[in-house]
Length: 174
Image 1 (tube, rainbow, N blue to C red):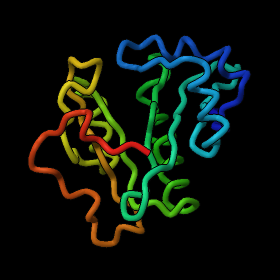
Image 2: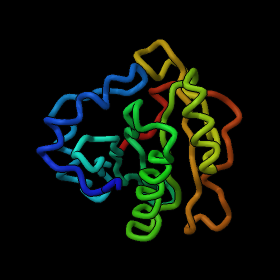
Image 3: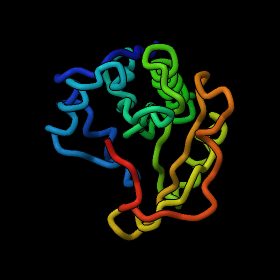
């Protein structure tokens, strides 16, 4: 049986194998520690019965006014645990925290434009492409900013797609 719980410092020593996927961004330890300290409700790990890490999700809540939103910084599942709806469960958990606890308007994430399997998965979870960000990944590959409206956004304003692509310097960061 899979156990999903908050990510802990000990998990930092055990999750490297999950990050071996070339599409998964790997950050430095202080980055992960900051997320654990500032947004613990947005950082979860899925563990197999034997204790192996199956996958994790890390995110945060940010923005102001109608831009107040949950953000998926990373979600990844080890190859041997894929096709078990684990990413969906992790995404649902982050969406629930964003919606019910932090009263966010939407959840967003960035995905490589070439990562078709991930894009299709997010679309099945009701995310839409809000905008294309030119050269978002290392100044080379475009990223897609995908969004899903939450219950607070009754009129679904947060998911009206932009008509033109943007550059990374046009993005709003908090």
